[in-house]
Amino acid sequence: MISSAHARTVANLAAASCLALLLGACGGGMSLPSFSSSSPPPEAEPGTAPEMPATIRADEIVGRWGLASFQNPADRARTEAAARAQCKNPYVITAGSSGGVIMHLADQATPQELRLKGSPSGKNYIGPAGPTPGEQDREIISFDGRVLITRFIDKDAATRYGNMVYVRCAPRA
Image (cartoon, rainbow, N blue to C red):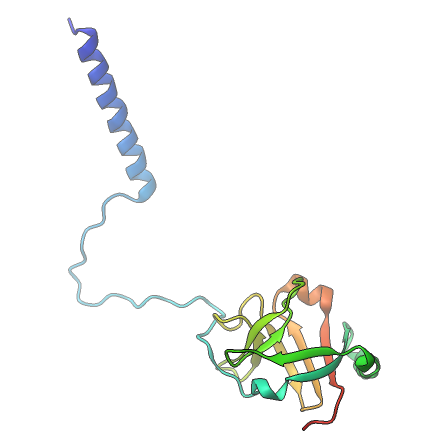
Protein backbone atom coordinates (compact mmCIF):
# COMPACT_ATOMS: atom_id res chain seq x y z
CA MET A 1 0.00 0.00 0.00
CA ILE A 2 1.03 3.57 -0.63
CA SER A 3 1.15 5.91 2.32
CA SER A 4 -0.80 9.17 2.18
CA ALA A 5 2.46 11.19 2.00
CA HIS A 6 3.57 9.25 -1.07
CA ALA A 7 0.09 9.47 -2.62
CA ARG A 8 0.11 13.26 -2.24
CA THR A 9 3.57 13.47 -3.86
CA VAL A 10 2.47 11.29 -6.78
CA ALA A 11 -0.71 13.39 -7.22
CA ASN A 12 1.31 16.64 -7.20
CA LEU A 13 3.74 15.24 -9.79
CA ALA A 14 0.86 14.07 -11.98
CA ALA A 15 -0.82 17.50 -11.77
CA ALA A 16 2.46 19.27 -12.61
CA SER A 17 3.00 16.93 -15.59
CA CYS A 18 -0.51 17.57 -16.91
CA LEU A 19 -0.02 21.32 -16.50
CA ALA A 20 3.31 21.17 -18.35
CA LEU A 21 1.69 19.23 -21.22
CA LEU A 22 -1.17 21.73 -21.46
CA LEU A 23 1.18 24.71 -21.43
CA GLY A 24 3.41 23.04 -24.01
CA ALA A 25 0.43 22.52 -26.30
CA CYS A 26 -0.57 26.19 -26.00
CA GLY A 27 2.88 27.57 -26.68
CA GLY A 28 3.60 25.46 -29.72
CA GLY A 29 6.14 23.34 -27.88
CA MET A 30 9.85 23.36 -28.30
CA SER A 31 11.39 24.71 -31.50
CA LEU A 32 14.48 23.17 -32.97
CA PRO A 33 17.21 25.19 -34.63
CA SER A 34 17.03 25.50 -38.39
CA PHE A 35 19.86 23.95 -40.37
CA SER A 36 18.92 25.60 -43.66
CA SER A 37 21.09 28.50 -44.81
CA SER A 38 18.27 30.67 -46.12
CA SER A 39 15.35 31.86 -44.09
CA PRO A 40 12.56 33.98 -45.55
CA PRO A 41 12.81 37.68 -44.63
CA PRO A 42 10.15 38.98 -42.25
CA GLU A 43 7.21 40.38 -44.16
CA ALA A 44 6.08 43.97 -43.60
CA GLU A 45 2.49 44.69 -42.69
CA PRO A 46 0.39 44.97 -45.82
CA GLY A 47 -0.58 48.51 -46.73
CA THR A 48 2.09 50.23 -44.64
CA ALA A 49 5.50 51.49 -45.60
CA PRO A 50 8.45 52.83 -43.64
CA GLU A 51 8.35 56.55 -42.92
CA MET A 52 9.82 58.71 -45.67
CA PRO A 53 9.94 62.48 -46.24
CA ALA A 54 6.87 64.23 -47.61
CA THR A 55 6.93 66.43 -50.69
CA ILE A 56 5.22 69.14 -48.61
CA ARG A 57 7.31 70.84 -45.91
CA ALA A 58 5.93 71.56 -42.44
CA ASP A 59 6.62 75.30 -42.80
CA GLU A 60 4.32 75.37 -45.85
CA ILE A 61 1.26 74.58 -43.73
CA VAL A 62 2.11 76.61 -40.62
CA GLY A 63 -0.31 79.53 -40.30
CA ARG A 64 -3.89 80.59 -39.72
CA TRP A 65 -6.59 78.63 -41.57
CA GLY A 66 -10.34 78.78 -42.01
CA LEU A 67 -11.71 75.27 -41.57
CA ALA A 68 -14.80 73.46 -42.86
CA SER A 69 -15.58 69.98 -44.19
CA PHE A 70 -17.65 68.23 -46.83
CA GLN A 71 -18.78 64.68 -47.60
CA ASN A 72 -20.04 65.17 -51.16
CA PRO A 73 -17.35 66.28 -53.67
CA ALA A 74 -19.99 68.50 -55.35
CA ASP A 75 -19.95 70.63 -52.16
CA ARG A 76 -16.23 71.46 -52.39
CA ALA A 77 -16.57 75.04 -53.74
CA ARG A 78 -19.29 75.93 -51.22
CA THR A 79 -17.19 74.39 -48.42
CA GLU A 80 -14.11 76.42 -49.42
CA ALA A 81 -16.21 79.59 -49.17
CA ALA A 82 -17.49 78.47 -45.75
CA ALA A 83 -13.90 77.80 -44.61
CA ARG A 84 -12.81 81.26 -45.80
CA ALA A 85 -15.62 82.74 -43.69
CA GLN A 86 -14.14 80.98 -40.62
CA CYS A 87 -11.00 83.15 -40.75
CA LYS A 88 -12.49 85.38 -38.05
CA ASN A 89 -11.96 82.38 -35.74
CA PRO A 90 -9.04 80.58 -37.45
CA TYR A 91 -7.59 77.15 -36.83
CA VAL A 92 -3.91 77.83 -36.08
CA ILE A 93 -1.24 75.36 -37.18
CA THR A 94 2.08 76.09 -35.48
CA ALA A 95 5.56 74.67 -35.97
CA GLY A 96 6.55 71.83 -33.67
CA SER A 97 9.83 71.61 -31.79
CA SER A 98 10.94 68.50 -33.75
CA GLY A 99 10.22 69.78 -37.25
CA GLY A 100 6.56 68.77 -37.39
CA VAL A 101 3.36 70.76 -36.96
CA ILE A 102 1.03 71.15 -33.98
CA MET A 103 -2.46 69.91 -34.89
CA HIS A 104 -5.29 67.84 -33.43
CA LEU A 105 -5.73 64.14 -34.03
CA ALA A 106 -9.28 62.86 -34.57
CA ASP A 107 -11.31 63.04 -31.34
CA GLN A 108 -8.43 64.57 -29.32
CA ALA A 109 -9.00 67.81 -27.40
CA THR A 110 -5.31 68.60 -27.05
CA PRO A 111 -3.20 69.30 -30.14
CA GLN A 112 0.13 67.54 -30.46
CA GLU A 113 3.13 67.52 -32.75
CA LEU A 114 2.49 65.56 -35.93
CA ARG A 115 4.84 64.78 -38.79
CA LEU A 116 4.45 65.26 -42.51
CA LYS A 117 5.17 61.86 -44.06
CA GLY A 118 5.55 60.72 -47.64
CA SER A 119 4.91 57.34 -49.21
CA PRO A 120 6.31 55.35 -52.12
CA SER A 121 3.08 56.05 -54.03
CA GLY A 122 3.75 59.80 -53.83
CA LYS A 123 0.93 60.52 -51.39
CA ASN A 124 1.56 62.75 -48.36
CA TYR A 125 0.21 62.26 -44.85
CA ILE A 126 0.02 64.16 -41.57
CA GLY A 127 0.17 62.06 -38.41
CA PRO A 128 2.20 60.75 -35.50
CA ALA A 129 5.53 59.04 -36.11
CA GLY A 130 5.20 55.47 -37.32
CA PRO A 131 4.18 53.46 -40.37
CA THR A 132 2.63 55.29 -43.28
CA PRO A 133 -0.31 55.37 -43.56
CA GLY A 134 -1.10 54.85 -39.89
CA GLU A 135 -4.62 54.62 -38.46
CA GLN A 136 -4.32 58.12 -36.93
CA ASP A 137 -2.90 59.71 -40.09
CA ARG A 138 -4.77 61.93 -42.47
CA GLU A 139 -4.01 61.85 -46.18
CA ILE A 140 -3.35 65.17 -47.90
CA ILE A 141 -5.80 64.98 -50.81
CA SER A 142 -4.65 68.28 -52.33
CA PHE A 143 -2.54 71.31 -51.45
CA ASP A 144 -1.85 74.36 -53.61
CA GLY A 145 -0.40 76.69 -50.97
CA ARG A 146 -3.76 78.39 -50.31
CA VAL A 147 -6.16 75.44 -49.89
CA LEU A 148 -5.31 72.21 -48.03
CA ILE A 149 -7.72 69.26 -48.18
CA THR A 150 -7.20 66.23 -45.96
CA ARG A 151 -9.08 63.04 -45.10
CA PHE A 152 -8.53 60.74 -42.11
CA ILE A 153 -7.31 57.20 -42.81
CA ASP A 154 -9.45 55.72 -40.02
CA LYS A 155 -12.79 54.85 -41.68
CA ASP A 156 -14.87 55.92 -38.69
CA ALA A 157 -13.11 59.30 -38.38
CA ALA A 158 -13.27 59.79 -42.16
CA THR A 159 -17.03 59.21 -42.07
CA ARG A 160 -17.56 61.61 -39.17
CA TYR A 161 -15.22 64.40 -40.28
CA GLY A 162 -15.37 64.04 -44.06
CA ASN A 163 -12.90 65.94 -46.23
CA MET A 164 -11.33 68.68 -44.11
CA VAL A 165 -10.86 71.92 -46.07
CA TYR A 166 -8.32 74.43 -44.75
CA VAL A 167 -8.24 77.84 -46.48
CA ARG A 168 -5.27 80.09 -45.64
CA CYS A 169 -6.48 83.25 -43.88
CA ALA A 170 -3.54 85.54 -44.48
CA PRO A 171 -1.42 86.01 -47.59
CA ARG A 172 1.56 83.70 -47.74
CA ALA A 173 4.74 85.32 -46.45
